[in-house]
Image (cartoon, rainbow, N blue to C red):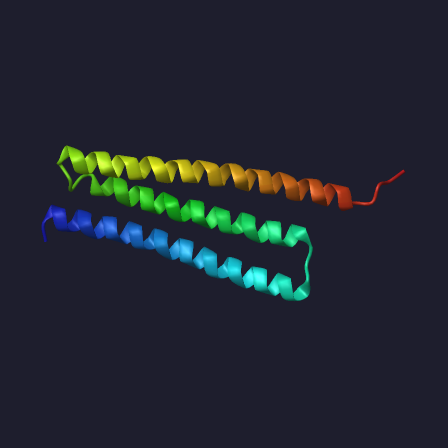
Length: 121
């Protein structure tokens, strides 16, 4: 096995790990939504599930970005590097937007919890 094979194995491992993490997050989120739907839970419960799913997507995207970075070792061609760079930029923007949405969801949950606490006179 040469270095190129090793880099390919590492890149594929990172990519598959990212996909597994995102798929796992989707399954957990779907289960949580169905469970909370059957219990007719509050909006806060759905917001919590959505926030957890977004965090798992972000984590999975980090693995996919790492895979793309490792792939650049294999592609000395400038066109391939540009394409991979574009993919990394898109995934990085997605990660940023999901992080922002997750922070907004967390703030929304905190405000809801604060409004539900009984006011002490």
